[in-house]
Image 1 (cartoon, helix red, strand yellow):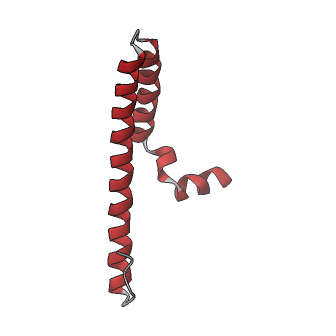
Image 2: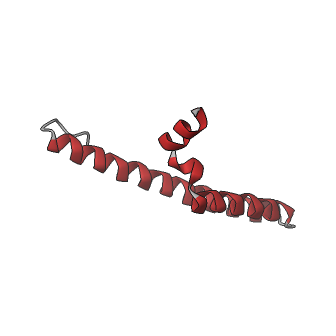
Length: 81
């Protein structure tokens, strides 16, 4: 029962596409770590990956903030952004 409630509150835990992507990410990370790269090459790739993740996280934050902002406006409250 507790597991079901957790899944209902966090659909990410049961989203097959998301879980598959995370599994693929782990496999690709393992393969990446096995590559024979110079420290400079590895740093460039790591910076690129970090940039993608940061931009994606920021996009998600702004998207959710705009939804919250819209709801607050519909309720007649001051918006956050």
